[in-house]
Length: 354
Ligand SMILES: [Zn+2]
Image 1 (tube, rainbow, N blue to C red):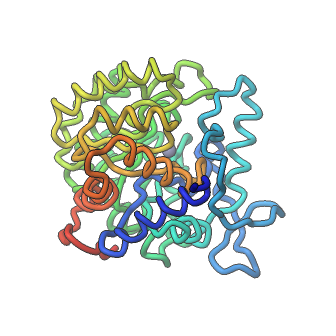
Image 2 (cartoon, rainbow, N blue to C red):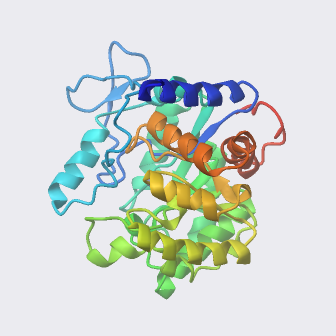
Image 3 (cartoon, protein in one colour):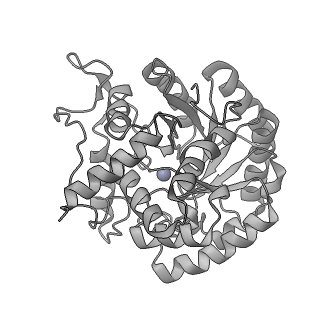
């Protein structure tokens, strides 16, 4: 009889084998803690590519058996706001190219999209600069750009163009809840629509947090990214792909997820440029998403470091094996061909040169 650890190895080997021909990408990784926005790291004097805050020892990731049923830090809705913020911060005691290289090499992924999130004015600009110095040396770590809080709609095109020309950004990250952008208001809609127009002109994919964010203030902002509000946005303004993260179900119950997926489905029908990522969802919800949404519209993402990449990858592989009639084809599509298409990479059939 196979043990759980054998199952894990078998799943990993299955994907690692296909990964020799197809470059698998993780399209949803955060280089810094999204709640504290802290980018003050020091390079480790002994370990190349490791950047640290405080004196905590760095532990490289390892496959752990038996932990898959446990809730993840970002998804465990705690009433204790302080504990939630501390836990989020603690997850990011270390960052840097070494941290993400260790994460992808453990499971044989080819690269990640780094998505910084800014909550206050000036932070997106600072993150572009810190990331250029910290991550640019490793071509597997693709730079994304946070939505810049405080920049007016008519200035956004110039901002993103500069970020592409100077920092080589490959995607834009919009987090309505953390950036305080409410799609119910005209101001919020103007900011989102201007970002979409810029993303389309620059042919950059935009990744949008979709779902709830527990514990943040003001309370109303926790719901800015829920599907009922995102449905008010004209996503077709950008001709480039727009990826609604977490399949619109972040921090939702199974019943709430069912409702969110109905709205998501109608949006996918309406806007051909919309895609969906499966990042940081509990196993029953990933299965639901795989059952309800065509693999042509799905993209793999983890939401690391809030969940280790290996764990998100195993959850995804396991769900595919349970739900899909063609797990090989769907894996290749969701984790390699679709992300390549979002990045406008031409060689979609084989290895992606990042
Ligand atoms: Zn995220």
